[in-house]
Length: 82
Image (cartoon, rainbow, N blue to C red; front, top):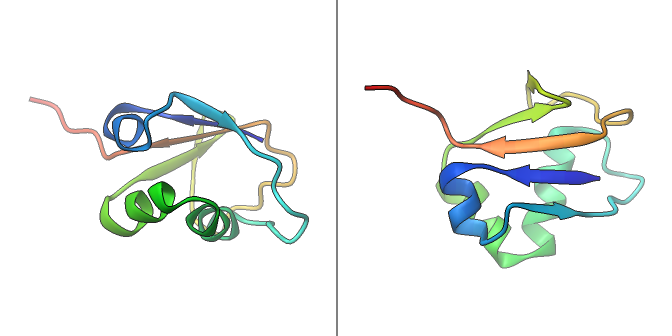
């Protein structure tokens, strides 16, 4: 699964994207976040301490979204304008 990071999330994780093979029991976005938190302490820190949104194939999704046919996941912080 291709995971892309944007803005502050990218800075915190230290990379623009990562290709990760998710286990079969990872079905939803919530499952993926739980897996990533165990996969690497950096992800744990980001998901525990920062607000974020997730888009699957360029559509904003909820944490219970099923990712079975998803090609690309984007993780980004809330955006504000000024």
